[in-house]
Length: 404
Ligand code: ACO
Image (cartoon, rainbow, N blue to C red):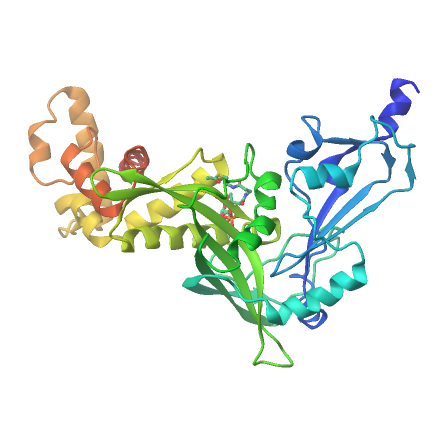
């Protein structure tokens, strides 16, 4: 076989691999066309298929991995039009997935049996652990726009951050609940083996955590839906989760580190990542034994999310902002306070470059100007339990915002 022929038997694994979340029939039917999604692809498959993320030996390959939307029980199926005879060069897909622990040994291969399990799980499955937070979002029931793709992960919620629904659009309030678990939570170890799969598929450089490390904590986010025809029944659907590890922090506290954080593609870009991060942050603030929240090797998208949420929190924190802005945040009659603030910031920067800025700063003009005030930073970094580097970055962003 020449190189060109060989190429015809190779498939880009990220495209061939289709994941989906399956709901019970009644729950699926009550989703609007906009909300319904058929499937989504992994972002990374190199932990399974190697650096090139290619599967060799098949034509028209489709690797289906379906999950029961709450319990995450799996159904696995491989479809193709042609396959080369078995040889070491031809990928044995099932073995590779099992080896990478993306596919679990108890997966279903009979679709009817899987769908029966989905029906059972839909009412039997309840989130494990302790509920720590809940919120709701309005989901619009507008018709799916023309030209929607086969694999669609666009669910467009009508929340405060998206456009106001048109009058003829029907909207439904959907609840979301966040639960806290540890390895001691009954049944969680087994459940975690089902969810950790998403770490390999969506976090670059992500790897499984060690089950023998007892200290891990887990925060899991679910969509909670009420059955239309039997309103007494609530069903739960997995949205995303985060793993947290507490490190000892002298003398008697811990520093909690976000190690892994993932929101499944159908739910991304809807504010759920922010909601999950905020719930973790509130948990840290409310826990006297936790000194601060840190993040392990954050991906760029996660850094954005963290910055946006931390900044929003600071801007809404009245006591912090009062001290940060000093007297200038109170209007003195000469125009809106915002403009006063801007003037002070700009003045101070200019004065500094002219070498005459020192004395003016003593007049309680606030702290949002360079050079940053060390005592102010130390006090608020401690009170707000934000890591040093992150807090410094936030202050710099606030300085830029107020000088602007
Ligand atoms: N309607 C429309 N857009 C919205 C809404 C809304 N209701 N709410 C938020 N958005 C926008 C935000 O403004 C933001 O826009 P931007 O990207 O232009 O800044 C964007 O949606 C994302 O914000 P969220 O929706 O809050 O975040 P999301 O739920 O998409 O989660 C995350 C982000 C966690 C990075 C997710 O994309 C993900 O899981 N990615 C794959 C895995 C990953 O990279 N994880 C982080 C690794 S780092 C680590 O683990 C420590």
